[in-house]
Length: 120
Image 1: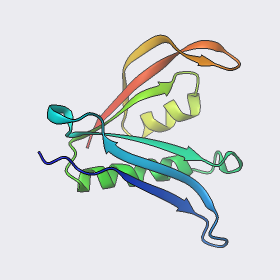
Image 2: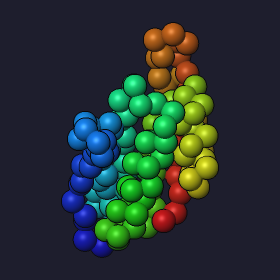
Image 3: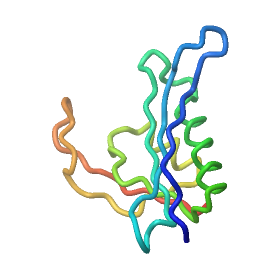
């Protein structure tokens, strides 16, 4: 398997050209594990709840599949981020494991991090 290069992409407002969110896609690890993709997304706080993270994720799943990846893995989804966890589950991801108290949330204190996975 030839390692695919990383990619960065943005969601842009069609009327103003403002950047609403961004994402990135890359191999989760090198060598023998390079057939599994990893991605991350950021959405402008004022755009939360409008489906942009889902759109960025859907784009990255298609791009990963087109690049020859066989699966996608998220290494660190904060378990208290119930909107993100629900969105990723609805897109076919499953929680494989939760690392207890791996994230120090500024309001909730130590919470777990989910490792989430789906085949492409």
